[in-house]
Image 1 (cartoon, rainbow, N blue to C red):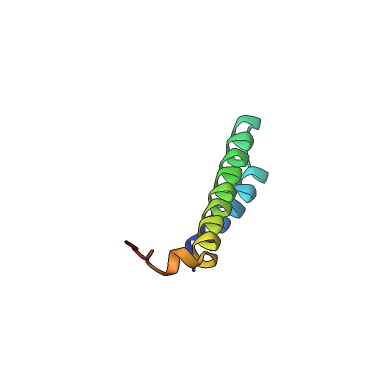
Image 2 (cartoon, rainbow, N blue to C red):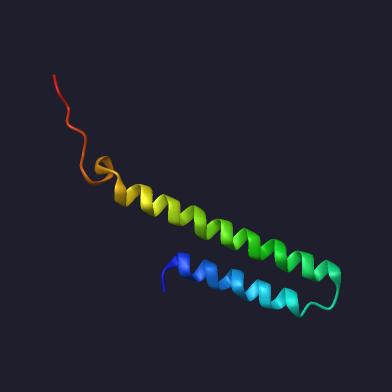
Length: 65
């Protein structure tokens, strides 16, 4: 499982825990964690797509005189 997939799984787990929370404060904390994991996954996805889509990331720059 990739890190992005793991982060999304953690977010789903937090949402499940939020639905089972005993207090409103617990529910809010789990929802906040779920949002953080989702943002981390999205951010990592963005980094991966920029790296794989950029020709510069695959080749070294040429030095010219």
